Image 1 (tube, rainbow, N blue to C red):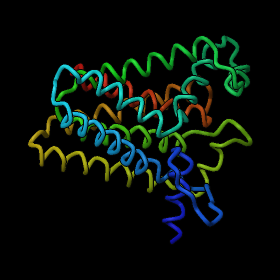
Image 2: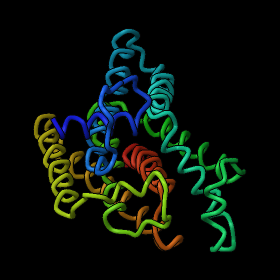
Image 3: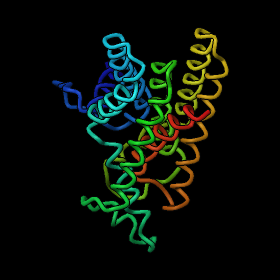
Image 4: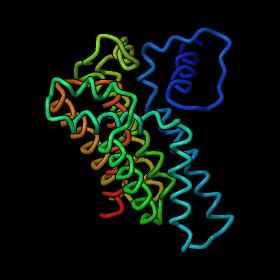
Length: 250
């Protein structure tokens, strides 16, 4: 029952799905469920993509399907992670390092935040539109790996604020949990590769996801000296965007 309540809390926190709980939810420790929430979001938007392909099996409409799918993913999360990526971009644009957190906390979006949002959405839409096969698998995998990157950053780097929405994520999180989730995601990719007889794609997808999310988290830590809730969102968004683009390119 406790695990189900934590999972409910994770869904309520990370998405805008109309899930109501009659009990008071404790959001501490929900980060471990983020990759599972990512799988569900990826599967949901991939299911819509599959349905649209059956409804109108026209390869010329793949770009339109990709646009709908990416915007649906944004709707499900309520722009939670994209907002963090935008705030992070605005903060990093400041030349004085001591002012970066102050700028990131500002609710107003600056020019760099807007440009970051446009770049992320374009990379996702164009990247997905270029991928014609195994879209369901790729979306579910990347969306879960992106949130594993957030999980690793929570474990590996200090949180820069005394209070904040991201502060409670570190409570109750253990190193072994993070690596157990990574092992399960790797095993799932290899299993899908065996089923679809595409081990190359499984290895490539895993390598791109791990390296991208790891490097983004490390780079943000180097720039800021740690992480905040905004940078966790930035890791998710940039991993999804760069991951789709890299898979499409390769």
